[in-house]
Amino acid sequence: MSILLAYIHTPEGDAALNAAVDEARRRGTSAVVVTVTRPVGKVDPAMSTEQRLDAVAALFADAGVETDIRQLPPSNDAAGDILAVVAETRPDVVVIGMRRRSAVSERIIGGTSQRILRGVDCPVVLVKAAAS
Image 1 (tube, helix red, strand yellow):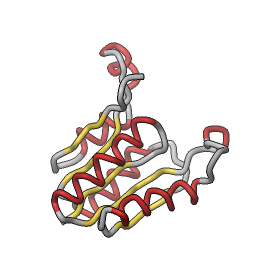
Image 2 (cartoon, helix red, strand yellow):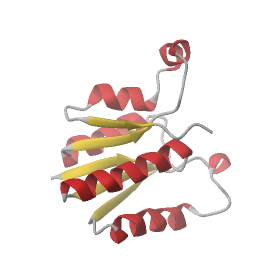
Image 3 (spheres, one colour):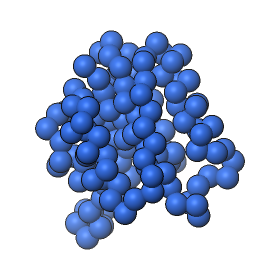
């Protein structure tokens, strides 16, 4: 048994991270964290990707949750890459953050979260960041 967190450092991703830690602790299971490396221009300069993933691993460790972190290379198909890890690991539940979008925007743009939601056979927990 495991949960899979599709993580990227955004307010939505951090909300999903907290939900994934709670879900894994509640279920008494391990976690797989999948993150797709962001292109250089979109990286937060305050903390390196490695430092951020170390902080993610520490959060799970502090909760007593065994974690496998998989950092995927930059991709034009992040959803497809995440779905490949879902197919490989066969988690009990997938946790993802979701941006707030209008219905029209979602229809035109699509979105990674929507593709993952449609592409998995297990339950999905969609998490929104708190409104600011």
